[in-house]
Length: 183
Image (cartoon, rainbow, N blue to C red; front, side, top):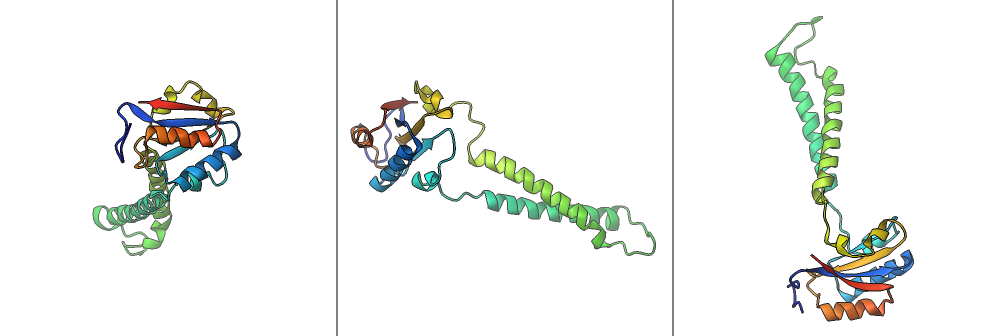
């Protein structure tokens, strides 16, 4: 049995299967109320309120996108400034070399480009993707999670995780099945 904060060797957690989304949402809320913090829910479609129930916190993705957008805009502006003022200054129609209003579309497009790259690669990094393997794939019926089944897993790394207590708690939620998830 695992102690406080010490996961059981070779065990990822305990997973419970539910037959409908309302049961899963109620189970997640009860697990949160019971004090579990390291859990995840799997459903074939989004369930309103589930992210709050499993303790999904705000991510840093919006900050990453903002910073990348600012860097892209500044980079696009600097690129135009360097090309027109330093590297290849041309006097065209008597305009000054530092004619910044003409560079706004380029700076904007560079900001959008880097913000989009920041969003995609930031999302992949923050989600730990690509992840070709996850321990819940070892559960026999988990392939139904993308069709019509609903699963709640309490991870062994949870500070409150004790195998017998978690199994007894999940049993009080009346799931269809409770299974240990091996690594």
